[in-house]
View 1 (cartoon, helix red, strand yellow):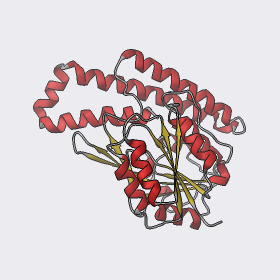
View 2: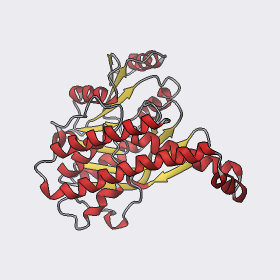
View 3: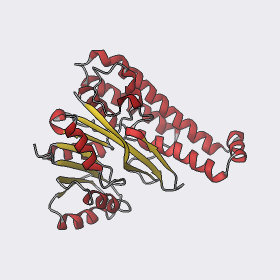
Length: 316
């Protein structure tokens, strides 16, 4: 094994951000990688920008397809990947220069199937950054410098702390060769892939440092949830993702209860997004009260980040 990394990037109308993403990848201290960019029917200048990079670097491959969604784009990338490891990067985000080096060195040293690291959510509109260790809501310190899986860890409630997203993670390709994304959903295609990986992995480890930079902006790949009917649709699609994940994990019946509880929690999160959105738009006494107690810019930034971070994460 030569530890080559296949970086898979779904691209759809992100001409404002793809350059920063590509530059951060090409500056990596670890250079044994390929970039597979799947243009999912972009109508802006994204494809032209990618083609300029491809002309100067043979490690970059560009695949074009009619718009089929992020799940289909990632599945296409998996099919074409030749590396020993899979790395999923959103084209509107960027990574630390030692992102691959750090994750890979820990993965090899620990003989891990799945490596996680911390991330920073950065909000363009407010300018506020929010660090998140290990891609988790709160990172359990007892797992620092350890190797674990969901079968030998005593506290299986740790499942509730991990976000079902693909960024800030490195997957050993051989372990997950048959795993694919659920296509046809506008939202939540990340969750079945990630949680199936978590249950299937024999060795998981993570780095507490924040090495991935996750951009929050109005023009994200997925459509924002902004109306009642969209919340209802989001909940329906989350349930579809749950059923798909459940079918993927028929060989792990001992995890069924944890999976049920987790997806119920995720549905409650969607409802919390709706509540935050309603509060933010209502102009009611609660918002005015907070505005009087705290600086206006601070309140605005926090409400913005709460809504858009939850919204973008659950759009996956």
